[in-house]
Image (cartoon, rainbow, N blue to C red; front, side, top):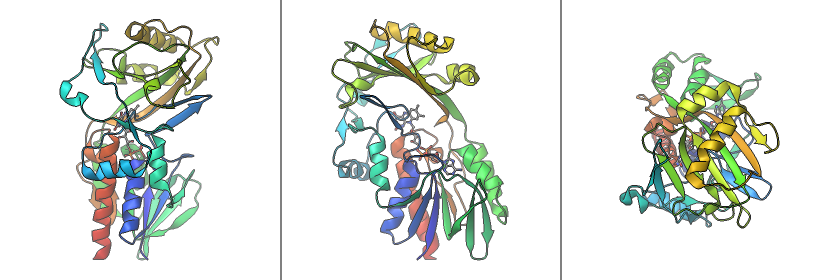
Length: 344
Ligand SMILES: Cc1cc2nc3c(=O)[nH]c(=O)nc-3n(C[C@H](O)[C@H](O)[C@H](O)COP(=O)(O)OP(=O)(O)OC[C@H]3O[C@@H](n4cnc5c(N)ncnc54)[C@H](O)[C@@H]3O)c2cc1C
């Protein structure tokens, strides 16, 4: 049985692994963090549950619709996405995109990752550091030096700088230079997600607002309580995704964590709360504030070369756009490419 190592248990890696199983190959997934889903991440605090990375999933193809339906408990977010500008002018969004369904799950977006991961061989808390190519295949090594096994092919799905680091620390594969150079061309926007629980909900006709002039410190503001099962009755749950510029300015001064409102809040968080208020009104003193940093939030460019030897790249870096459904489709495509290569 031929084996394929998949680096990263985000949506691309898990989709690739599922697809490989159906072609009779054996995938083994290595994930550096403690859970699956990558940037499609869900967090729980008390009775609140929120997605502080990807907000929802689109399904523009029948294959994606089938996948979402197969989870059995997907729901759509009813209210639309509207727009706002630097001077807090709110307006209805593009009516054509208002009809696009926005899929989510009552237990969070990681439900989709958990569905994909069911029955797969996934090694969590395992950071792949390098690859050595020998005549018998690709040997993977963890950052603590542990040997992780020998594989016939590899799918790399970590964000571009992390994938490039793995390839740069590899031996016996002069051809990977082209992949490293390709990965180095991918540019990312940073983001900091600030999630705030309030004692009240705002009365808005929209689910979320997107900043269209890119001049606001907030790029996206969502009413997470609009998703079923996310907040106790009447409590508000807002997610502000701060702009790349704001995140870059405050990156070194802020660390992830949950803050009580009576604690001395870092000044940038107080500024973010002040920026939220004109968009939703006064919702009272926050119950808590959570901060998460995303160094590689959204790719703005695509990797031009995605395959060399029996090593294939997958993930949103292949599409050049940060979207869960594009990451999934790239995983499916990578699995198809590996299937063809290993059949030769
Ligand atoms: C704040 C934010 C908001 C977003 N909003 C949306 C949205 O509303 N809708 C939408 O469709 N998309 C959205 N996205 C984008 C979406 O989350 C991504 O496009 C998608 O999840 C990328 O999946 P992926 O599998 O390509 O990468 P990732 O999810 O990044 O998965 C890669 C995995 O590789 C792991 N890894 C890294 N290095 C190693 C290593 N050395 N060894 C082992 N594992 C490693 C990482 O831990 C990670 O789990 C958003 C992203 C962010 C950050």
